Image (cartoon, rainbow, N blue to C red; front, side, top):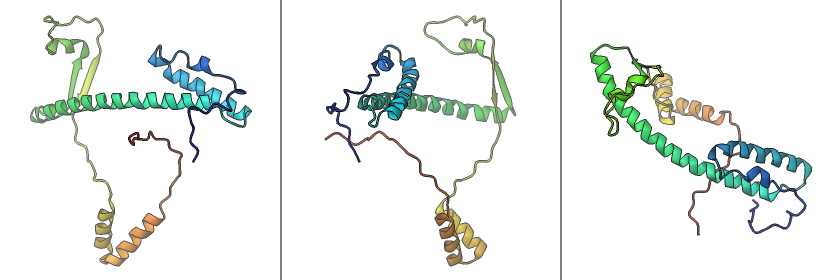
Length: 192
């Protein structure tokens, strides 16, 4: 496996720069997707025209990748907090909706602020936008996931023979279709 050394610039003199694709990235985070697209397009052109890919492009793409990874960690953390709050609210609503035999709750979202206490706002909001949100209560079947142990138990019950059950399970596992896909992950090992 090759390693790209940041200090190695020996092959870079003959390749066009792509700085114009990367200039505005720090100005506005919303341009990251556009800038990445430009870099990728530039890289595809360079790969087709040059025998050696532009190392600056690779470095910029890795930089973009790291920025996205860091943003994703923050977003996932915030998403987890919000999901915890939503789950708590759902657990509070379910007994109420079951006890009152309510299937739907529809609320005018312009009135939501009037229901929520606010330190800065002591009067209800008078928003001009009127939209409605609907919450539906229902029961759904949630199946357990399959496991090797589950299959052995089910096959043993069906075949009444542990050896046949294990043979069938081995046959199923050995003949599963698979697809190899390229994968890039950020190395989470600590620096030495």
